[in-house]
Image (cartoon, rainbow, N blue to C red; front, side, top):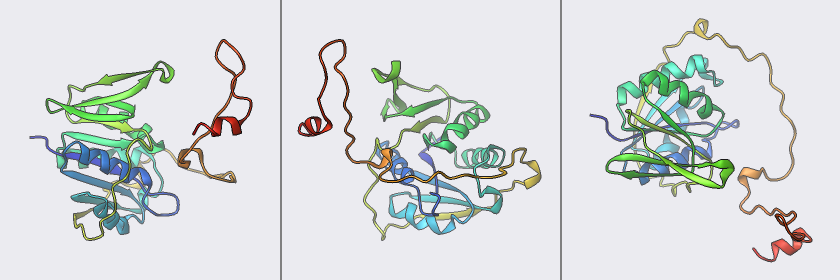
Length: 230
């Protein structure tokens, strides 16, 4: 019988655990757990302890050079295998580059559906209630999924990551990818990284925005005027 929540964690470009992983674990724990965190990638084995410290009860690590970059041909079959082995009731991914691509492909393979870009998750009668913005963000819609597992992707920053507890232990299971490089149809031929300065918008604690009033008089005359209201 399906049980628990499986989250697919991610590593950041610098090799550290991506913040979205802690947010997913927090969301999973709010649904009652138990929480299993799957880490796919190359050089991610050392991040299992971080997942445990954030509250995961079990960590599945698939550390393989073939998973160095996210490519659907490599990641989706591994994720499908993990889902079938763990038999979770709920599967959560971040609304990230990986999550946007992998979640619908994984849902199709598992014969279920996925609610994308969610801002709130809850349970009602044992079924997942996934809330996401609609009509350009002016309203919210709540979805439930009849299939199993119930799947959702979570927008960044809607859940605070748990406080780290280094004493918390988790069962760590290491697996091989079982995917050959020859089966991957897509190749990354190059990367170009743009230089940026300052705080990224998604990492800012306060965002100040100004503009004209809607259908009426002028809005705030300056950002300083708007900032006084914060």
